Amino acid sequence: MRVIKIFFLTLIAAATAGWLCYSFWIAYQPPPVIIQGQIEAQQYSISSKVPGRIDKVMVKKGDLIKKGQLIFTLYSPEIEAKLTQAKAGKEAADALAEKAEKGARTQEIAAARDKWQQAKAARKLLEKTYRRIENLYRGGVVAEQKRDEIDMKLQAARYTENAARQLYEMAKEGAREETRKAAAGKARMAAGAVAEVEAYVADTRIRSHHDGEVAQILLRSGELAPRGFPVVTLLDMADSWAVFHIREDILYKFSKGTAFKAKIPALGTNRIYTFKVTHVAVMGDFATWRATNTSKGFDMRTFEVEARPVEPINNLRVGMSVLISDLVQ
View 1 (tube, rainbow, N blue to C red):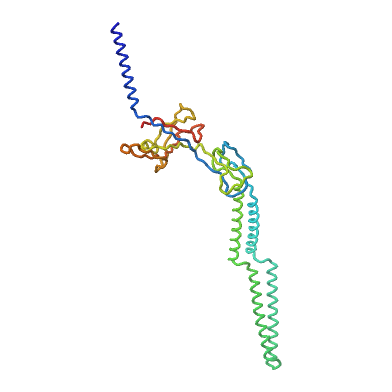
View 2: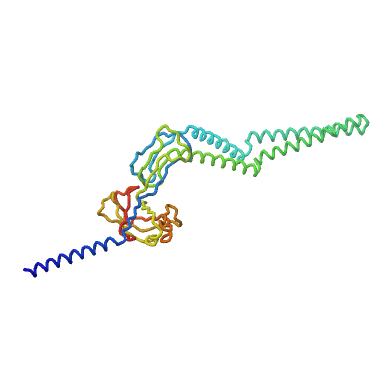
């Protein structure tokens, strides 16, 4: 009986000593490092290239948007007026180009020909008159001045006939090649102006260029939207990542391409997710840890590290905390 009692006492003493040794060992172990980050996602701002008044917003916060879906419309009478002006300018430029290409009308050519024939007949008449006056001058009937006056009129008639013939030839040939090219260029310029304004008109119906979820609606119907001002913002949760700020003395554990386990408390504390480091900031700029004893430590900076989930995570939201707790200091 006494032996059994001594055995149990010895066993209890040994257990107590073992527990004390384990407690001291645990107490002097370095504490585990818990790193907290948060989820971020790609954000897109939907805006218009032209200013205007918001006509209607077609979406609500939380809506899932597909690429090409109509988001909002603008009302801009100024753009409609500019489109009318541009179309009128294009019509005028097209008419001038067509006129330059086709040349003068049939009636204009006929009128030019008649003026040439009229000048030609006047020249022939003056030639006959000059020959008569020349004969009379030689016979001493008329003075030399009279002959000179008729000669001057004959020269003027010849110049008039030549000018009328040139105008007739120009009317037949139509516009010069340079004129036709200039007119065609102005027509293309006017067409470009119409296309530009039509593009602005099309931009009064704003569609999404990405899939995503509506995060914010910054302007409502009736409000003025400046050019480039974001009216609706989207979040693409399919393109999400976690951001951590890692102290530089443990940064070696988070080199690019490294995978690690983490918890997301908002999705359940018992679930573990795998992340892979995709980006490490080239320089630390978030915070600095100051050494309390300069003889035993040094100041350490923090580097921003981005890590993406290896597999898609359901119900993930921006701002959720991500915890890494399996690191030892």
